[in-house]
Image (cartoon, rainbow over all chains, first blue to last red; front, side, top):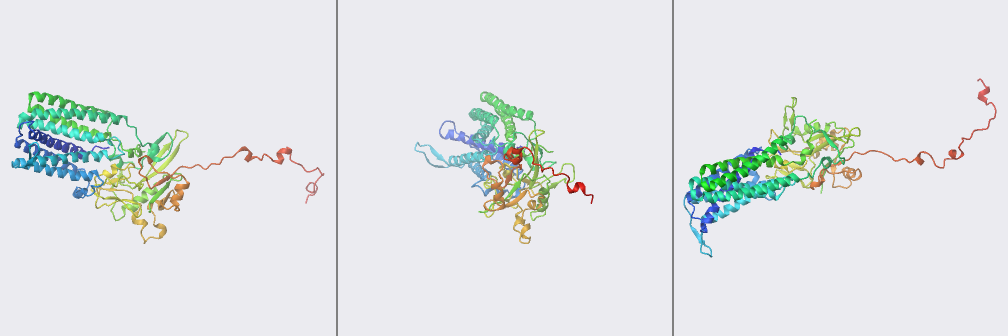
Length: 325
Length: 243
């Protein structure tokens, strides 16, 4: 497939935004159960605000993918059958919950709604935060299922796609939370950085698993099934157009194998290994600069990872577009 | 239930592209507006087509055969492109099984083209909406046309009658006969899309002749080994008369 930068930015930006919110709410939940000291509302406001900016950035990027963005509202209608439609609903829903969550902490409105049997208070922010957490995961699943649901694109048609989107989004979000905490709430930086390392390494495992799986895939469709002629040697001579077509522009990445290979090793280092090293260094030093660098490098690595995700998928229609003349 | 479809006979297609040009001519002149055409007379012409003819070489020289392969939307009975559409612009008509795009609802997200394993859908770079073969839906029901002309443009244009059009759910239709009796097949059956369009394979007309069919085993001439000659009766009339 041809990697479209609109979709690359959409998926990576909202992944980081969802991850950043999940990181903030994880810290607040730890604090609610007394596992961590109380999180300053200013930090929760800051991280919700930045998460909201990331989500808005992703949403803006997504409009560049549309031929007719002015009709985008129609995309919310087919949620019964289309994962894309479900994402179009889940994305603003999560942003709404995120906005509420941030606003509660900004105005420091956090009434206690009741008590758990253990006596722990149930705060309004915990309720809104839980709803937002649920929506964040719904959004992760919707985004990933857009790709995992296409059975013809076998590189994507695996549960690993969903796992990768969740883990990689979570990892970049927790890394960003660690960097923010280093400046705004230094006591929490090791907590976020620790989780970021765990998620990054888990992401490395699942992404490597999907790379190994995809390397072993055997195509289901062949030139024989594409034109229905049973002969071992079928060579295309013309594709019916000389100057290319939508079919040649949309479904081919146009890069050499060497480029693909270097992008693959590039993202394995920049999205996983280098951030892990920097985060581990940041764990002990609590240096904001190192943690910020970890996020920047990891985000650039995830851009490369998403580019490779698209480029690696080999669409069966390409069988009809092997030679110009 | 009606399922309109094309049946394309690869045995007689000569790859002349008449179906391609007639398709473009009809559909670029329709109510949906012109189809994208960039640089049509320049070096790298590109544009939107509902139908293309491709050519494939089968086999290794010298025993090769060139197969011309017209390719358009197959109007699948289980169209994978329809449920993925986020706006409902892509739909399959209940009454005749034609898969269509509502150009006024399409947002040009290209997701349906990703979901089609055949590459049958093309984004119109001018109108920024997804376009595909309509089976000339604006022609086959047009009562102003004589009944014989209510067929897709490509079917009318084909000089070798390689394209048949009809209802594949009607067992007595021309297309059902052709599929049943001439080995009609669907493309990429592995995906379970049940394409309505079918292709008829290359066929060689050969007969098997045994030796004893060329020469009668009980030929009396062979048994007697010599052709019987009339008895020598001396000169005939031709030998003596000069007329």
